[in-house]
Image (cartoon, rainbow, N blue to C red; front, side, top):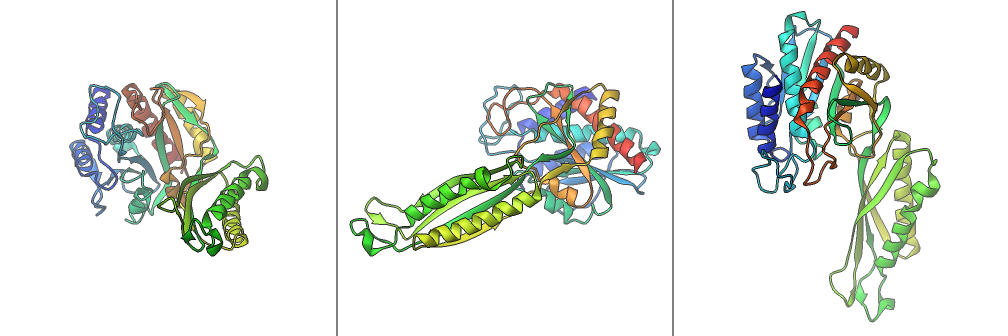
Length: 372
């Protein structure tokens, strides 16, 4: 099993595909599942799969893996490095897919002893925040009573699992503000209404939301990531644009920040004689780990020989949170070593962590199925 999972992982790593283009990945996983005698559901999603193991009856537990890669040029010098220029599995989705495929194979070996059903989701397009909704909209997960997932973590060594109850990953929203004034010649600023000073004031005002409007113990981030105005040196432009992101660990804080952003944008622009168009787009929700599942996971980790560490919270988001609107669940950090963070060219995941993680998820799925 260890050799098989390592080979699967290395094949996936060599053949990364971007979101919604995971055709070869999907077919590779489809064949591996069918070769193992595992039944597949007809998702009609183009890419991605849902496999089924068990008696087809409740309770139904789901394991989720994501399968898309990132537009990054790999620089690891691994013998199984990406063979696709400019595309790389820099977030460990190749590891996730191989791990959950291993868990599916282990569960298949015990299929006649399972008291219910396990659905294994191989989800496309996690990096674009589209994949979870695609799989949910199939309606094939409506009977799931508990969702489980894992994510590579380079700061824990192989053989380690990170577990934390409660909020573990932030919500992630996008905002934009377009400020409109009146363009004119730069030599005659009194003939127009310059949106750039208004833009600067809005940026400064936004920086006070977390530092002055929120409880210091409420984790949140407001980051302005794009500023754009004008196209030449001697013209005061008509408009100015800023974009950014909001991260929060509480849904109430998330809403408060949105309201503060809009209020400050509209009224600050008005004070400068400009107007502001504020837009806000909700992304993944706060990812909240079920306490009971985490307690069970801690016991299972010991049984399969994994060391348990406290999973640190992060302002990074995960669309796994969308499944948790259907039913409770938990996401765990899988120690994969490497020493380089996700989403960069030097990221690696130690394949030695594959089999222990697969055993963990297979055993956990069966255990929580009994409890359900």
